[in-house]
Structure formats: C-alpha cells, structure tokens
Image (cartoon, rainbow, N blue to C red; front, side, top):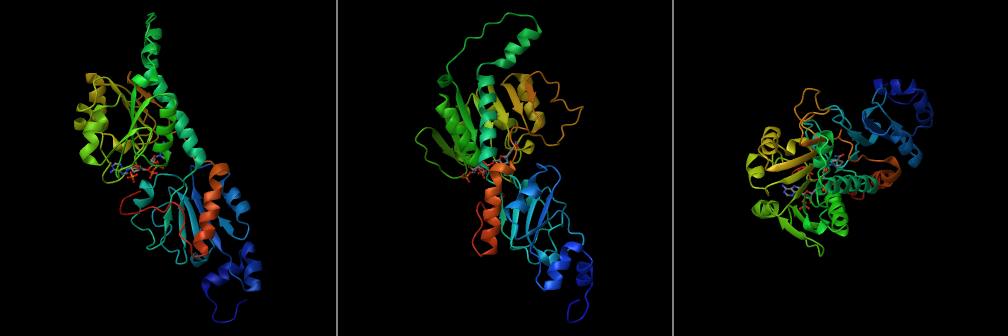
Length: 337
Ligand code: NDP
C-alpha cells in the first residue's frame, strides 16, 4: 500500500474505509478529535460542517495519533491527549478549565483555549438577573409564607437600594454586572487585577475583599476555580458579610466551604443561598442542601455552551492554530484560568 517498511499503523489505516482514499492518494487526513459526554449532541456534526477540510473523530480507535491536529474536549479521560504528537490546539468546550488542568498527563507546549460564547454569557446573565430579582423581592419568604397560609406583605423596595457584588469580572461577571447595573441595582465588582468601570465601583485583590463584601446585599460568585479561589467562601468570609446578605453561586461548588455555608444560613447571617454548582455533581440525594429551607438548588443549568453561538470561535481557533497564529482566549495554566 505504501512504499517503505510496513508499519502497524499504516496497515490499520488501510483497513479503515474512511482512510482508504487519503492513504491511496498519499495525503494524510487532518483529524479533529472531539470528546464530550455531557455537551449538546449536535457538536461533532456542527464542527464537521464548519470545517469540511478536516475529519472529525469521536474516538482515537484506528487513528494514528500523529494525524490528530486539534482536540475539542470537555471532561476528557486523563491521558487521552498525551500521545498526540502533532496537536496544535486544545479547545476546551466550556468557559471553566479547572477539571481540564487537573489532568497531570496533558501534552506539553500545546495552547489551551477556553470557550467564550456570547450565548453562554447571555443565558448566565438572565439567570443571575432572575435570581437577584427573586432575592431582592424576597420570593423565598413569600413562598414560605404561602406554604404556611400567612398573608405577609413585603414592601417592594427599588433595586437601587440593593447592592449586588459580583466576584469575578471576566466574560460572565462583566456581562452580569452591566445588566444588573442597567436594571437599576447598585453594583460593585471584585477581580484579581484592577478594573476601571464608569458604571460601578471595583475592588481588586485579597486586600480589598473585606471592604467589598461588607457592601453587598447579594454576592454573585463568577470566579474560576483555582488554587487561590478554592474554599474562598469559608467561615471567616461568611462572618464578615452584611447581616442578612444573600449569595448566588454559579461558578464552581468548591469555591464554598459547604459546612460553613450551612452554619451561616442556620445562624441567620446569610439569609438565602442560590446554588447552581456543587462539590459533587449530581448533588447526592441525601445531601443537606436539597431540603434546607434557605437554599435554592438548580442542577448546574444556569447556562450552557451552544453550538449555534460558539461554533465561530472554534472554527476560527482551529484555523488560527494551523496557520501559526495565536488562538483566541488562551488559558494561562499557571494562573489556572
Ligand atoms: P474569566 O476568566 O473571563 O473571568 C474570571 C474573573 O475572575 C476575572 O475577572 C479574574 O480576574 C477573576 N479572578 C480569577 N482569580 C481571581 C482571584 N484569585 N481573585 C480575584 N479575582 C479573580 O471567566 P468567565 O467569566 O468566562 O467564567 C467564570 C467561571 O464561571 C468559569 O471559570 C466557570 O468556572 C464558571 N462557569 C459556570 C457555568 C455554569 O453553568 N454554572 C458556565 C460557565 C462558566 P482578572 O480579570 O483580574 O483576571
């Protein structure tokens, strides 16, 4: 089939029908490896349609590893990418990369890009606005009063009396902060590096965290999970918030010390917590969060990546990486996001 010594991979390629044409003509296919068990099932076809010059494969079975030039992955098995010697881009199929960077067997020197999807930001912004309004209008207390058949009038306060603090002013945090601010809420933001925003006050770094959190009636977690942010919301943090403040976690479960959260809710310092993400997902049926009267649980569905709005970044990144340009939204593995 090919000149030179027969090698096992080549023989295997020859018996893969899809590879026959390329082997017979002497050219090598450029393969995009797709792996995700949790994302929208339309993804592989969407990528194949957008990039017809590549071959999208869902498995490495029967493919010489050196044919894979790009990998589009979400929650891949550890070591899956290790042997791909010609890999030019790893495109993570989501905004958070904590689980991805936890793989100790990643190939070295390959750029890792995360997804920045306008659809993801739009759904997240809706969710945060929805839950902030519910907390501000105290729907948790109205629902409790209804269950107890108590007519309880809660005065509808205007949004400017409510200060919403957004922790993390990245793609998602800034989108939420801008919408909340446009809706009339008083908004403050906290990030690692200093930001200047005309519409709201910003705080930066650990030194300014205490002053920031003491201002907030609603705290919205939109930080990546890194060595610095893991367990950030612990007993000390929760002792130092406003009496009766509330919290929305749409980032990662491990940002919060779960026992400390329950203690702060039971003690009354924290009035209510809306949790979309958890240390263990799915949340186990016997977990105390399910039945806690001051906790709202949603099943990590505040937002999700959508092929219709995110395919553009993926095609652009693969084309960029293969033509020697820097991909968009590259992750800094040392910072962890
Ligand atoms: P970005 O990387 O765009 O923004 C992250 C922000 O967090 C930046 O403002 C960054 O600061 C700040 N930050 C990082 N580390 C620290 C620190 N140690 N102290 C203070 N601020 C810090 O991320 P996105 O906005 O795109 O996403 C945020 C997170 O949301 C993701 O990492 C993911 O975990 C989660 N997520 C959850 C989803 C869900 O369905 N629930 C969906 C999508 C994402 P700086 O600007 O200075 O770099």
